[in-house]
Amino acid sequence: MTAEPIIIGSQTAGRYKSAYAVGDPDDDKAWGSVAAACVEALGSLPERANLGFVYATGPLADDLGSIVTFLRERCGIADWVGTVGAGVMASGEEIYDRPALSILVAALPEDSYRLFAPVTGGLEDFTREHGGWVAAHKPILGVVHGDPRNPLIVDVVEAVSEATSAFLVGGLTVGEGEDYPQVSGLQVPGAQVSGALAAGGLSGVLFSSEQLAVAGLSQGCTPIGEPHEVTEMAGEGVVASLDGRPVLDVLREEVGELLARDLRRIGGYIYAALPIAGSDTGDYLVRNLIGMDLERQWLQIGADLSVGDRLGFCRRDHASAKEDLQRMLRDLSNRAGGAPRAALYVSCVARGRHLFGTQSEELRLIRETFGDIPLTGFFANGEISNNRLYGYTGVLTLLL
Image (cartoon, rainbow, N blue to C red; front, top):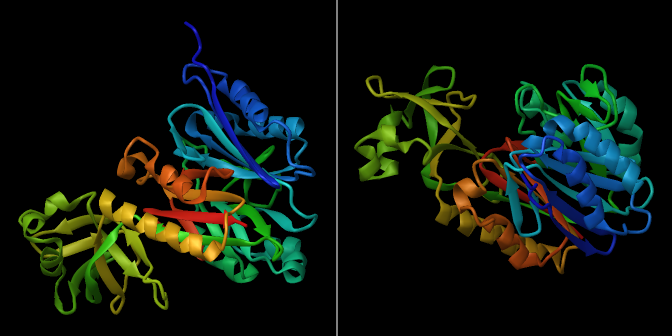
């Protein structure tokens, strides 16, 4: 049987260049041909290129270490960061299921960025290794990748953000089996490390104040009604009442008459919305409704809640998600003050083809707004923006 042709593409803008390659799903050794095709698509690199981002789809997860070694040798770039996603992105393109790579290389001023190995819990090793650089360079941006299996990952994101004062963007690896690899050649005690890869915590790259960037977040859901106060809990994550009323009575009022007739139909459409205190943009965290007791009128939510917390509901649909994505793009365009040189995009696994359809609509909307600029990214198991872990969101970072 004849192998399927490899699909490639590339974009260039000043000191940034991106490329992607898609291989034959029936090729057991696709990583070699896909990696070689990516290098071919890159062609001549920006002068003094010294940093690369690499994202791979699941079929290449087992070979990611070999891919990074190959890229280092062929491109002459020692520093790489990245991970595995449910899909990868390029300018105007989303690629799923097939063996695929998306890479972005940059030529940055010497010592203007700093790679760090996975932080698995405390910051002692991180501070010892990078505290001096952080104090001297005052990083404004961090591109990070996290391991969803680490129960402390939310705390680690907050701790790294606080320790560096950097705005973090990124997401959690989408693993297969026991493999949740992050690209990092740096070792840290407690992290699982194999060659160029690591896992177990939060790793990535920090950029000094020399790097200009703007970032935006688009929610995949739209709030319905106003937030309420949790007035009674019936167990861990189990809400009994909001504003002194049975929680399911409140839910029925807000989802509308049709869904209220049978709340079992709201799965995959209605979610919990946890407002972020102090947010001036109305940001909220989306969490799943994971169970309900119709007899007791209780609702179980995938979040750590307490009496006195604020809780609302939101709906997820294509129209509202597209509208919010377009809002974010307009806002970023205004804030960028001109055409960006490159971009990084991280979107939830539940977005993309599952929410916007199979024609790469998310990435095409980005391209329509900012042009055919170098872009890379991946579909994540949770998205990171500033100091928080989100769900059902898209996080776009423009490099200026």
